[in-house]
Each structure stands twice: as structure tokens, then as C-alpha cells.
Length: 105
Image: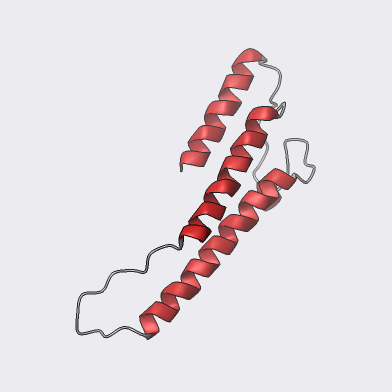
């Protein structure tokens, strides 16, 4: 959520400086997640989506493994997110915002 808000703020700031920078949005497609405004593949967008999907999969697997080994007679909480996984996720989001701030669009 924070990445979305940051990306929106960066884009709005750039459009305020150059109103003709962004064209009106077209009908959204799934490929928009990994492509730039000119419909070209964008490494920054791709890495953010890939790291997010990988993080969700790894956490889901660890949660399933955790659930297999618990006793259901007591109160149980979900497993903590591994610090390394959280760091990689944060770095991916930060890299995306850095690319967004440094780019022209």
C-alpha cells in the first residue's frame, strides 16, 4: 500500500510539472503490471511483481508447514515473516519507487 501511494505521489508530481507527460489511461491489461506507459517491458516493474509473487508463495508454504506441525488444543498465531524475506520484499519495493522517481514517466 505504501508503494502504491509513493508511486502515485511521484507520478502526480511529475505530471504537475509537465502536464503532457502522461496520456489518458487505456483499458487496463494484465501486461500493464510489467510494462511501461509505452507498452515496453520494464525491468523495474517486472522485478517488483516477481518478488511480490515469490514472497507470497514462500510465506504461504511456510504457513502451511507451520499449520501441519501445531497442536490445535491451544491458541495459535500465524508464523512470523522471515527477516530476510521481508528485507528482499522491502528492497524490491524501494527499487521500484527509486526507478519511478528517477525515470521520466
